Length: 297
Image (cartoon, rainbow, N blue to C red; front, side, top):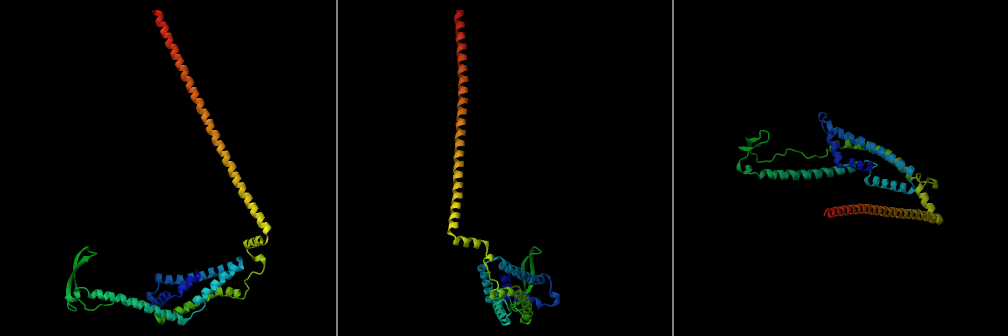
């Protein structure tokens, strides 16, 4: 993040922001623009401090391979973007390119506005500086309003292109030189130690724990086989345990279903017995009634 932010700080867009602010009179300075520029400077210096902490963390917690990769990438970016120095000719060059691009875009936009202005019917209907009435809807009054206008057969450009003022470019470069100094303080010492070979690990004791374990297994096939057998044993035990548990669960379900069936059968038998007793009582009662009837006859 520090590298990317530093690269952005060296771009033409940032040069314009600083030179545009510096060129203003004192009564036009301040406000959010001043706060924004101050934030950029402070933020960059904080990022350089974090970068230095990151470098030291990698040096003291990583192996040779990681250290080499990190420093080679860091050196490559610094060299590619030329971050360790301030080449004034380079910044003048990108400022010229920026101004040319901005000016070309500005002229295209003005040409479009000019063409649109002369395409309006008033340019042909009225003479130069001739006054005429125009009616339009008033946004504040919320009604149609009539006002007087003066026809002008020329287009008035009311804006200027936002270009880098080379008179104040040197002031920006002075700021950039101070920032670059801070950047070099954060990285140069460690890079020099790396280039001198003073950051390489010297003994196996400095290797990461994981690397040492892997290396031991590579050199000891018996240990590797034993570990593999142990893993297979643990996995097999877990599978067997799950199988037994599943079988026990199935047996419990079967037993539960069997008990429920038995309970249901007993209940049904009890109900059937009760019905049978009631039928016998009814028959006996009916027979007694018939005997009594015959006796009376």
